Image (cartoon, rainbow, N blue to C red; front, side):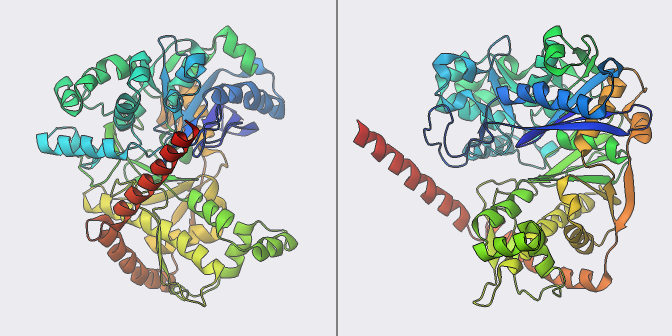
Length: 556
């Protein structure tokens, strides 16, 4: 059984150990979804750039999606030998000693900092900036392992925000837990950190976290953060974290005592499912955001990467990670907020989604004919600039610009963002030799062709609609002893369609010209040429906070 925890739902898949055949699946949407404007418990407004979730939603996935998958598969649950899970990251849960989330303590239910901070919670950017500046000033040895910058999405930035904005909760919290590890804790009854998030999101390099001295220089009360809130037993990927408890067996319908694999991240767990564990094979897991992972036998500093971790994907190789904070989220925002009603009506008449309809309208237009270029920063930039104060841009609009043309420009912008990442790796001496796409966006064949043309590379696609869940099942099979390691299990259970998309030379040449313009805008707004995006963010925060304070004053 593999269970994939995404941004809005959890998906469970029953997978045959012999050959990776997916026998049944189940999906459960989180009832509380993402809280990014108001706190569900009180309807109180949240500040800008917050993104929270309710941890009980994750347990409900086990209670609903797993039994649904078993029923869909039509198998005897006694045949299931193990369960593996993966999670979006970095998603953090503040808990007390026994793993109870702070928001489940009645006295803290109305406190935003008591809830899960989802990966796309970017309100800790000022704290990340301070961490980066101090690390650079002191020459901290771990900083180059993260391309010179750590993200506001990660454990230490979010932890520092918690301390400085709600010190009472910070002191009440006994564990600062990755959701990937918290859900395994619920399944096994014991807390085990996974090596993947510890290395990529927890600044754990060469067996140590950042020093007390460094953390105290950020804030004296932060000195013990690593050793008292974060540090814990670390489990290796595909190892067993324990066995399924009686309580978890009752939730899921699975046999008590089966193996539970050490937690993992949705992107990294997908690599063996895409048979992409050899050096140079980059896997892009494309959904609301995109995470790019690859292995290498070379240790190098790649500017703007999310990290390099020894054994971070498979044992014996360095695992690299980069990513784009917004991809499918950008397309969804545009369709929800910027598309006239007449398009939705026409799409319904054509029995198409609005996304499909816009794609059909624009797919045959010559490359560049819309006269537009966009920056894919609507959710900030994860790689290579590592700056979530950046924002989206569309340049070239005229009174004749059509809705579908802007949509296409946004699709292309995400491809240009991926090319920026690929070139950063190649230029740093970690060449990308094969590009494999996974995730929900793979179904958009026009988008995949754009990526192939922009990258000037063939694109292989994973032959599964549930790549992360399949990857989690592969790790579960290893944890249960069915295979000796992830490489062997991936060869047997993973599946891909090789070189489904190949570059069109004419389109590729045209995209080269557009990419040059993308790069010029990228550097102008992202590398200090013009700081307007940061100034606008500050103005927005001041306006929202000022209005909230005025409202509270009026109520008083």
